[in-house]
Amino acid sequence: MQIDYLIIGQGISGTWLSYYLQKEGKSFLVIDNHFKEAPSRISAGIINPVTGRRHVEVWMAKEILPFAWNAYTQLGKELGISAISQKNIIDFFPGPQMRVSFLQRVEEKGEYVFNYAEQNQFHSMFNYEFGCGEIRPAYTAHLETLLPVWRQQLKERKTLLEEEFDFNELKISLSKIHYKDIIADKIIFCDGNSSCNNPYFHLLPFAPNKGELLIAEIPGLPQTSIYKKGMMLVPLVTKGLWWVGSDYAWKFENADPTNAFRERTEQLLKDWLKIPYKIVAHLSGTRPATLERRPFVGIHPHHPNVGLLNGMGTKGCSLAPFFARQLTENLVYKKPVLPEADIMRFSKILAR
Image (cartoon, rainbow, N blue to C red):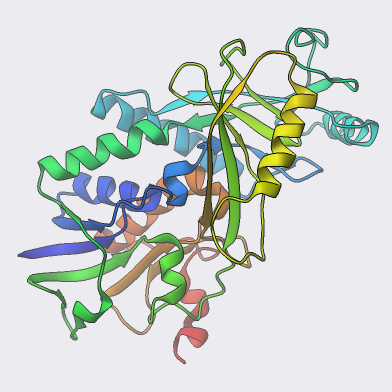
């Protein structure tokens, strides 16, 4: 088999890269092991315009958010599914200091933070003493629908190989890459944390962090918003199901779920919710984050047939479409990748 691109991984990055390459009429094959707890497959899909305790605007919000909305909307139309929804965040203040901090951002004309007019609206469902604000617009990308539907498309087009990628089978020459019986112009790694051990990219400053979450049935809770108080309650596509989480662990022995997280989160729900709920799953995964909190995008500065689309971290749902498009335009039209994301910035490190 001879193709233009071999893509490793069908998480959110591999999905968007294969989509845009297909749009350009390029031939490709995706190799993916279908790991059920890959970060993309257990993500809530939150696209949040602010971050941190000060609710500061996320990096490139004015470019990234509208691009993501349009990209998911278009892909959803093509696949006949709903791929994204606007779900603004109702931010319940856990204490007086957080209330003061939020309202100060409102007074400073923070673009995405607002007073919430109906402060008593949620008293029948939640316990909250210090009021709430609203973050908008915020979105949820419906990855639990999008990823399997796109995977099925890849299968039908015979552009997916479901197996573990084996580095021992990879051979790279000056002009081509060879993998088993496949010959490609380039190989692009979109395989999340596996790239931390990739011999071409392991020197990059990856900083994987572990996240845990619960899936809860909360049939009495309106699924029109995301709710936040310490943790996020995010509505899933399946009616009545909610994603509850997540935490961030920078030091961890393994990626398995822990009793400590479950007990802490169940206590939070017990104190917060006034309506019945039931925990139906406890999951965990490791995010491919970076020390700089900027993605790794582009072609290896010393191996022109090897590329990377990775390091999206907690912002993967918003960053992946934008940078998959940038990488596609770089591959096809030689357009530059944004310098803050281009792996050329690590040229000296990758020369070692």
